[in-house]
Length: 107
Image (cartoon, rainbow, N blue to C red; front, side):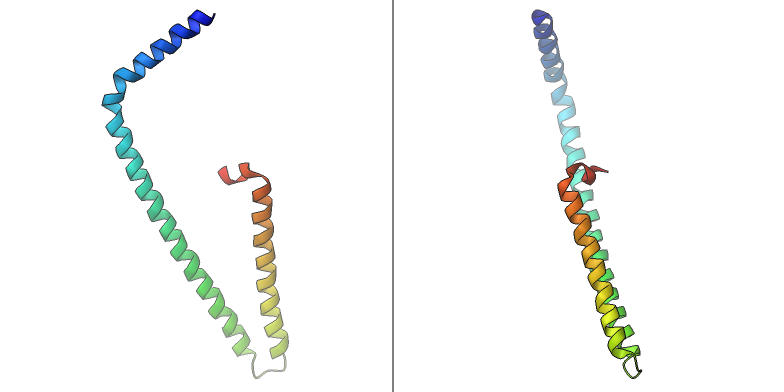
């Protein structure tokens, strides 16, 4: 049993040693391209998130300014602030839930 595993391991090492010079450059190139794509996707996602945040901020200011001369301007200001507070709490709750269960990041 032990000798069989030693032979299998030796065969595997021999197999990898024979093929590594042929497949090594391919794996290296694939990893380089994968890294470049991940960087591009991450940068695009960051730009989209910043643009979305600016949009939400300007939309909030527009809602408050629209109600400025009306009788409910203070209520609108507090409502907009409250909505942002709820969004923040939901985001923090989601982050806390994911930090307790690391396997959620993979799905």
